[in-house]
Length: 443
Image 1 (spheres, one colour):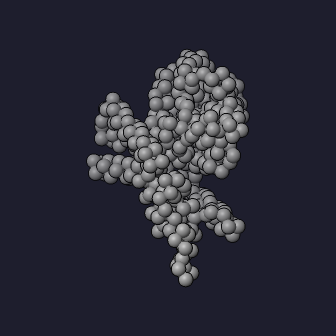
Image 2 (cartoon, helix red, strand yellow):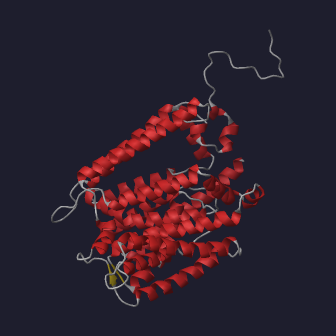
Image 3 (cartoon, rainbow, N blue to C red):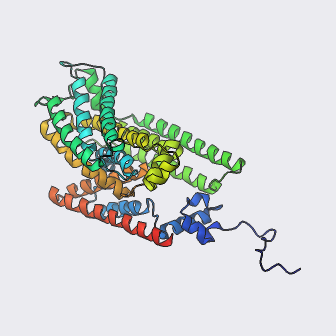
């Protein structure tokens, strides 16, 4: 029987699954490749289609990390040593946390110039609160009060931006200047340290940055974390497939779990190498777990909750989100609160890292806001709002840390390091602009 030319013939039985990646509409829709593929091969083809369509994701920053690592290793063979890699990650943690904090503002199409000084204020407050001659609070109470104070700063700034409709650039610039003065006032013009081993609360704050798990505990933690994450991922995707929902192919899920396991083993193996010139320093630093917890919590919040969907909707098209019933003032305010809280966590790390805080160190916190924005953009977060993930902040922070670390190993002067970081930032911003134009051109 001849088929009606006005109808699309049904696929023959046994013809196999349809390759959705071959449909130009799917390519232009910018849907996640794991939802546009039924096999691992289709997933990689869909991913490449997204890259050609202007959504390169983390590919540029991953390639950048590889190039940076190879280049510095050729220039100095110590760059990829276990000791330097652990130092590099430790030094990058502040950049990572501040970049994650900045991402909450950037996703809205806003900017928060105060994250560096919120960090500075948080470092001073937590250090002052554990002083035996001052408040002498337990370390946990000092951290909680510090984060509450930072959250209050974020609420005030967020309310001014969201409810009074003031430009975020002006509000947070003013906040930057005010917080610098407040932090110096709290500091009292003197040196405040947390390195006295005679006081338990100071020791705990000090160990947040400088402490490490034992090698055995490091392996146990890795097995527990990777095992829990892998089992959770597999069960969630299997449940989706059982209920007929869109889910990635099982082979892709297995590959993700394998990559998590390999990455975990590599990190623990590197950290368990003795990295002390004298004595023994080995094991996974506490701060790696802290950054991981913040990353996972923020990723779940933005990727798995209604709040996260609203954030992306506002950044993509605020007016459309408002007409859909999204409370723009509330979501915007909460984003600035979360940005400030994460900056406060970075402040606790900063106090632990610096050990002793002075007026000059607080003033130097101004530089960190620029590095936070740079890390977020280099990692792949868009300056135009609506596109980005918290993992971008971690990867971008690692790039910033690697550049600083590698150039210091080569004895390059600090002003030239700033030039290199600025050049990388401009390159990342250019990629963002070009990818946007490419995506709009295909829409």
